[in-house]
Image (tube, rainbow, N blue to C red; front, side, top):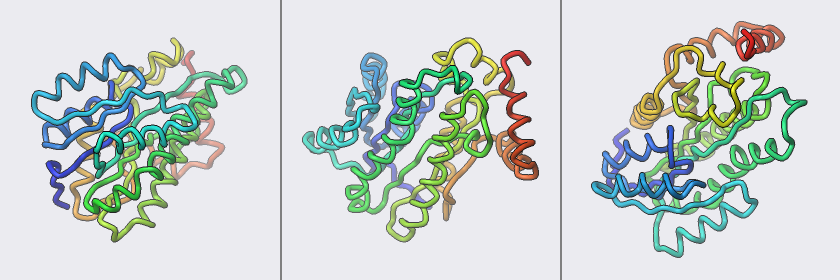
Length: 264
């Protein structure tokens, strides 16, 4: 499909770094107006200052883990007279630990940011997106959505939710003019794992993709004639997910337990 990025006002969460910042730079280069959302105000403002040389940029520093965050953001955006046409649900937090050792409060935050916030934001902005009729919703999932992930049980479950949620939206919104899909990265050099503790280094011990690679995959998929409901970034990640379908769930879980073992 032909995407006129210059007609788009894209609300992007988790924009202050990693894949979010790469999305922001790519969309700004294509002429889109950006509404950038992130919890950390300082790097968000720095990115906005960089992009304002060539693009129109609005920023909202907001912690999406709050139960009313989506409603407050929609109200703030509307009050500023901004008409959002597209949405990228990119913000995420994670943890890397055995479930029995995990902090229950942090697990609740993972669910709030990775599941509740994208659902609430999509619900809040969907009427605006449908009125525009030519935009897109891109939800960040992950290759772990397709595999059991010991030590990341809740995080991977949130990504599996995002794939299922997005596939259903893709079906419901066919013919509306709104393109919906999930992009599923594997290990990506974003610094995301740095906050998960030293054991999480095992996640990026092998070949990793760049944030720009993930964004390129997403935008190529968006520009296809008839984009499907999900796309996996990277040939190796696609191959891993495809081969996993030939394993029993027992064997897949055992395999991933070895892959995610910090002592391996």
